[in-house]
Length: 104
Picture 1 (cartoon, rainbow, N blue to C red):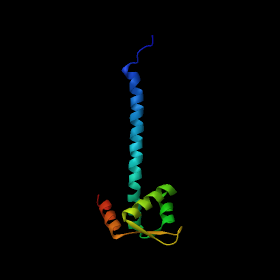
Picture 2 (tube, rainbow, N blue to C red):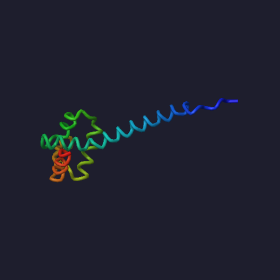
Picture 3 (cartoon, helix red, strand yellow):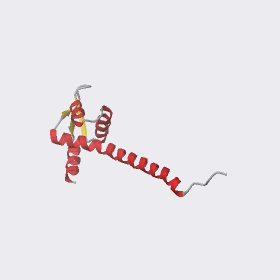
Picture 4 (cartoon, rainbow, N blue to C red):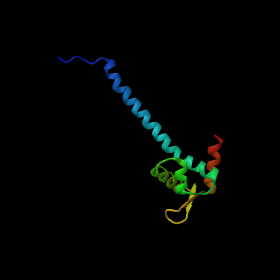
């Protein structure tokens, strides 16, 4: 006959699951703040080559690319220039978003 598990034995896996869930939530929150970090950077520095945004941010190419494309699709930034030499600049709507983000 197999011994029954005490409630404390079952609590360990529950806590591990809870911790994994919290780590995922923090990671997702950080991912959501990346576009705002790019907006803040452009507000402070003005138009910047996307590669300079990448270098200045210290983030991965994928993270910056996703953030820039999301901001462009939403109308907060516009890109100009040849492929590989694009310059990102805030649109008027992006400027208002940056002002709101700074006000908090």
